[in-house]
Amino acid sequence: MKGSMRLFAVWLTSVVMTAPLSAAPTTEVISLGYSMAETLIPVVEPMLQGEERVSGYGNQLIIRAEPERLEEIRSLIATLDEQPAKLRISIANSGNSVDSDQGYSVDGRLSQGPVDVIIGDPRSGNQTRIIRRATRGATDGVRQVTANEGYPVLIQSGQSVPITTTSTDAYGQVIRDVQYRDVTQGFYATVRINGDMATITLSANNDSINQSDSRLINIQRTDTVVTARLGEWVTIGALDDTAAAQDRDIGRRISTRSQDQNSIRLKVDRLE
Image (tube, rainbow, N blue to C red; front, side, top):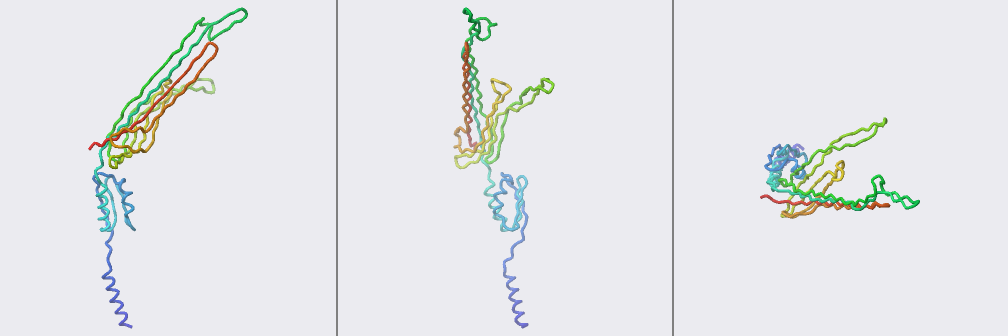
């Protein structure tokens, strides 16, 4: 019996000595050359096993893993941490607006025996007015910004305008309230390159003050993801609003027409 126990002890010792010993996990800080830690953490996390961990701060990754695994992770990071392409993003806004009124209006009094016909405002005397009014406006412009591939950029300009509203309180007093509204034009975009094609995640706005009523603000928004060839313009949004109305009565006929046309185009150029 003692001999059997001695043989088992010898066998167990040999198994322990020949079994592979896994190295203890270590922590390593990897400094990135071009990328931010938050962009690479989602890529590294699927590689981790068991108690391995990854975190980051700024351009540094903090990784806890076994030495062999650290080597694999370093190799992956070296492949991904490449200098991003430098790009120029151009956004072109073009718009035209037309408001027109056409017609005639007659004022006066016409008496014929027992019949007295009043047209318009007789106090103005007998007169006929030919109405023809037209206003035109154009809002064209190109905004450009230099960006790195994969990094969001924002460019925006505009002004804060006062908007006056009136109301009446319980005592009949007229209350005027002035609030400032931002009227801006610009875009927020992120671009990724695949060969000679660019995929753009874009949010653009082109607000303006209404030409007919300065208390109104025309709002134009575009949110989209579009793929375009580098160096080529592509239309990403367009608006064409037309409205017409007629007002007619005895001695009066007025036709009103308004049209607003706006479009947004985009182009991405590689600078290197």
